[in-house]
Length: 232
Image (cartoon, rainbow, N blue to C red; front, side, top):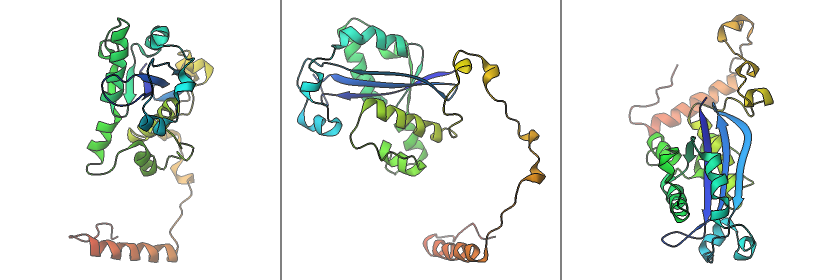
């Protein structure tokens, strides 16, 4: 059973002395959402930079009554322990996590979790292109219109969708109760040999669609040194 935790954090700012103020996590098991999440706001015991506040909208007043990291550290550790963490720009988040764990005498993240950086993956897949989370959402057709500000749980949910698309497409929205408990028989089996391919409808392009296709290939001919390779 492959367990992954898609994770994001928000912080008081960037650089030495800054602290985590929000953690959001979404659990995947065998590339399926289980419905389990971890979400926690944290009192950073320092002021939030104005620039950071403009990114995530979290204020000093909002976190003033939240628990400090030492109070939530064990619950956070228990949720992610043993999983592969899926993070966009992992060095940033893991660096802050390690700093916070060190302050309370707990081990570094790499000693109890694996880490997969989706930003590195995206740069390998799309060299020279923008690979922010917003850019990847646009590239894969994922609706993130509700993301007006950064938020750790929202961003981890969006990143989970992006990661699944980057690695072959989403296989299921949610494990049912039995499957979440490890009952593999509750998961539907699928075999392409069960499909009657002769019964599938065949839809052919219309004359207008073929004409539009040829016009687009003419445009490619003018932009590509070797011309379009999609001529039939």
